[in-house]
Image 1 (cartoon, rainbow, N blue to C red):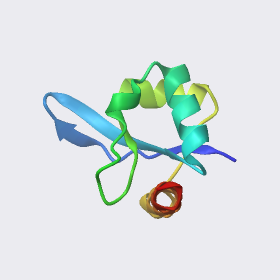
Image 2 (cartoon, helix red, strand yellow):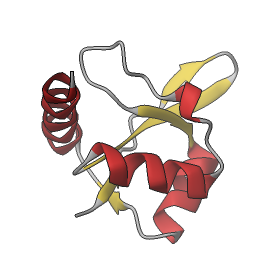
Image 3 (cartoon, rainbow, N blue to C red):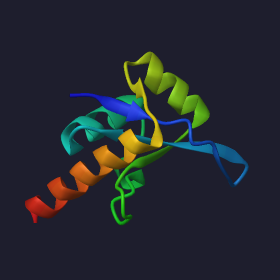
Image 4 (cartoon, rainbow, N blue to C red):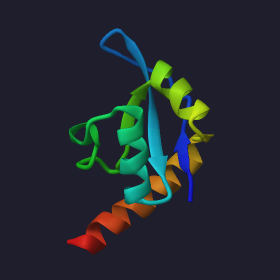
Length: 89
């Protein structure tokens, strides 16, 4: 199991943002909590569930063991998590 973060670099509200995903929802939420992210920040109502993180949080995530990922990996993981969310309902 792993946590992944991209380098998307989306500018919004004066900050630069990236995406954080994982192989499973539990792993993602656990890692996000360790990063200090609030569960309410989880983007669950999007096509691809994820946490948005600033580049400084991205750097911290990488230092804590997250892996760098390209868009394809981020989307694949998010699809798996979406399936996991649907199955839990």
